[in-house]
Image (cartoon, rainbow, N blue to C red; front, side, top):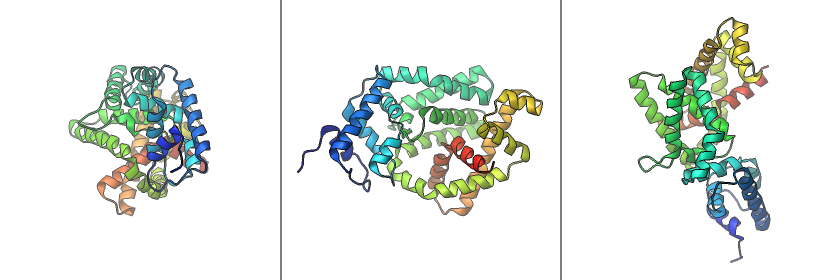
Length: 298
C-alpha cells in the first residue's frame, strides 16, 4: 500500500462514500497544511490538533462537487473555530463570544425589541450551541462551513427569538423543532443528498410564497435585502418608527417560510422529517435565497 501523508490520510479516511479520490495526495496534503496555517493565524489562541480538524472538515465536505473545489469553497477558518468550540476549547469559546455573539444579540434585539429578552435568547442559544444534551453533540456541530458563521448564527438567533414570542403551546413545539434541527444538521451525511435534490423545489416554492405576499411586504423585503436600506430609512419612507418596520420585516419572513412550507408539502411526497429537513436547509440560507430571488426580479 502506498504511503499517505499524515493529514491527507486522516482526511481521506473520513470522507463519505462517493466523494472520489484527490488528483494528487501531495497537493491535498499541501492544501490541508495551508488551511491549518490560515486557521491558526485567524485564531492564534485556539488549540486544536491538525489531525482532529481535518477529520472534522472531511465529515462536513459537501457532496456532488470535486474534492479540491469543495474544499476551497468552504469557510475553513470559521469551521476550525466551531470545531474547537464543539470539543470544549475555552479559548475558542471565548473567541466565539467576543467575535460573534454581539451579532447574535443584535439579531435577537431586532426581532424582540427588548434588550433583556434578547439577552435571554442569546443565553439560550449559547447553551444549545456549546453544550451536549441527551447524548446529542453541541448544536454548533451542525455548522457545516458552507457559509459565513456570522450569518448562520444570526439565522439561529432570529429563529430562536421568533420561537420565544410564541404562546406556551407553540413554544413547546418550537423547542422540539430547534433540538430536531441540531440533530438533522449534524447528520449531514444522511440529509445532504436530499437537500441537493430538492433545492430547486425550495427555490420555486419560495418564489411562489414571495409572490403571494402583500405589496408592502414584498417591497419592504426588496428594499431591505437587495438595496440594503436600513430600518431608519425604511421608517422614514413609510412614515413610521423603525421598530414597526422591524416587526413588518420579521412577519414577512415568517409568512414567506410558512408559505414555502405549505407549497413544498403540496408538491413533494416526503415524510414529515424529510420535509422539515428540506425546509431547514433552505431557511438557514433564507437571506441569501431571498437576495438571489429578488435580485433576478429587479
